[in-house]
Amino acid sequence: MTQIDRVLRSNLKLRHLQLLVILDELRHLGRVSEFMSITQPAVSKMLAEIEKMFELQLFVRSTRGTEPTPHGDSIVRFARSVLADFQRTRDEINAAASGGVGRTSVGAMVVGTPTLLMQAIQRLKEQSRLTTVMVEEGDLTRLLPRLRVGEIDLIVGRLEPGYASPDLETEALYREPMCIVVSPSHPMAEATRVDWAMLAEVPWVVPPPWASSRPKLEQLFYKHRLLPPADIVETASFLVTMSAMNQRPAVAFLARSVAKHFARQGLLRILKVKVPIELPAVGLITLRGRSQTPASQLLITCLRETAARHVA
Image (tube, helix red, strand yellow):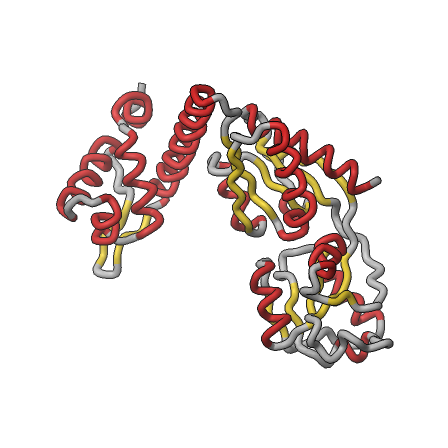
C-alpha cells in the first residue's frame, strides 16, 4: 500500500477534509481561522500535518494568500466528494428518524426553474411534506463541477451538447422554444409591429457565449442581413436578466414557458416576433453510476410527471 493509499484510507479525518475545502474557498489562512473559530497558528499546524501525511505540498503560501497546487486540487476534489457523501448519509439518517424522506440537492438552470422544477417540487411536497429540496441556480459551468463531487444530486436544464461527457447521464424531457421579451415599460412593449432591424439597434441582455441559444440568436440577425446588437450584457442569471430589462431597459431572450409564467404576473411582455430556431431539449443530468437517494428519486419522478403534463 502506498503512502497516499494509507492517508486516504485511515489517516485523514473529517476536520482535515473540512479545512482543505474551506482553505480552497477562502484562499487565506487568516480568513480560514476566523471562519473555523480557531487561531491562525492552529490552521497552519493542521495544514502542515496534512501535507506531512501526504508528503506533498498542497497549498502555496504567499503574502497574497494561499493557492492550491495541482496535488492540492486533486485532494480538495476528494475532500468535497467525501464531505458531500457524509452530509447525504447524515441527512438520510436524520430524515428516517424524524419520519421524513430525506433531502435532495438540485442544480437549476433558468430554462427549467419557474415551471418544470417548481411545479415538480410542489408535487413532491404534496406527497412528502418533510422532504427538503435545496435548489442552487446557475449555469453548467458552475453546476457540473458540483454535480461531479456530489454537492448536488442532479441538474435540471437545457442539455447543452458541448457539455456531454461519458461520466454524465442525460434524460430529455421536452423541447422548449425561445421568445423575445421586454419590460412592461419598454417602448416596444405596446408596439404593434417589431422587426429585426429595430431589435438590432437597442440594448440587449443575452445568454453567455457557451449557451447554444446565443449563436442561434446571432444567426437570426445575420439571416436578416443585420449585425447582432453590440450593446449587450451577457448572463445566465435570471435576476440579472430581469434587472437589465427594467433598468437599462434591455431586450431579452428567454425560454417561452419562463416568459409566459412571468408575463402572467405582469413582469414582462412577449414581443410578437417569430424565433424559428431549434435548441437542445430540457431535461435531467445525473452522474453515471451514482445511486440516487429516496428523496432524489422522488424528485426525479415528480420532474418526469410534470414534464409529461407540460408536453401535453
